Length: 175
Image 1 (cartoon, helix red, strand yellow):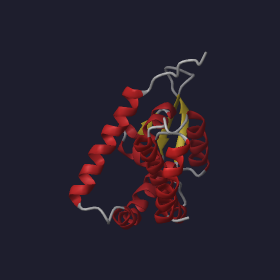
Image 2 (cartoon, helix red, strand yellow):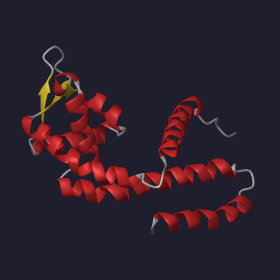
Image 3 (cartoon, one colour):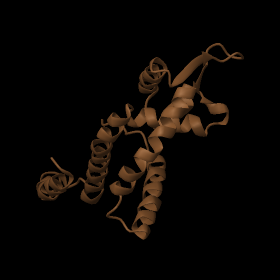
């Protein structure tokens, strides 16, 4: 199903959902559905791009973060937070990058419980080789947005992300 078809499905299903669940706030529910469709669409759009590069979106992100990091290194937990994935998934990502020789994993000398992930020469080359191949897909992904719309979207997404932090509350137990 393409994005336009997913949007049509949201439009078709929303009135029935509103009628079946009248207390459910529909504007917020639709917004969540749209964000999920956007995230799915991003993954679907970029997956073949990264596959051609021999990377995944997360592994590319890790390499970029390490290139930009002081001394080309970071801890697995830092990378997990910055990439926005679980620590268990980051372990899988790092295992793959280590086996491909793109990063190294060593134990921190001051604290034997902590690992240090460092980009290798091959990892630096892979990141630098990927950048020119990413320019066109990145530009095309947002080509329907004017520069002003793009700026507004970025501002609203940042505001939404911080709103999630403020709104996160534990559910009250139902008696």
